[in-house]
Length: 284
Image (cartoon, one colour):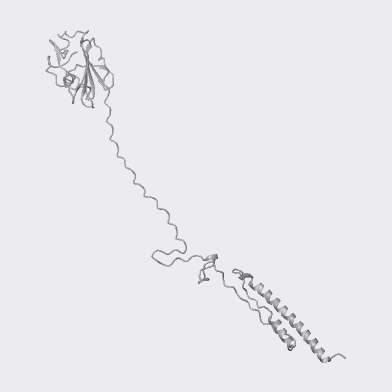
């Protein structure tokens, strides 16, 4: 392989022992073939040529005597230099990361590899390196986004139950008025205990006046006794019977009045008969 530059290369600088881990730098693969193994290194930065990348990856090189630019040895192999015949020479290749090898049409001294690409060297009869170009480095993981937790919701307040009727208002006030027993408005039964019966209405029968002539002696007493026998009606029924009191009192009054009239009539008839006998005198 032809290359521009000096015939003898200087000592190789220190290099990384693996492919470049970033998009910068040039990865260099050297396949020694029958001379012993494959090595991969990284030339950091931006090498200006294929030879600069080879040196930057830690490899030394020499040219064929009297043929400047033609690489004969890499890291002193083959030893001695064989003159680089077509059956055993160092072929020069290019590739992208994770791509395929392409044979170079330019010498290593005149080619400028781009950062992030791969350079390949293989000893033999023009074969490509035995390993594929190293894959592209994994992209950096994105920084985790900060997670914001939503603010906790305040606990729901239970509904306030209204105060029952009769309970004291806040601040020591009087209890709120409520419906009285039986649905009647308050104020109509003040002074009564809850459940007490309403006062009954009393009905007194009018005194009866005797009719007819007044009886003498015994008949007067009988008449008086009979007249006083008429009971006066009063409502002493059980609590809650106020609705039926007027009808029952009227019936009792009417009955007493009828009884008194009957007694008075009987006494009048008896008195009339007695007076008639006395006027007629004793029987003959």
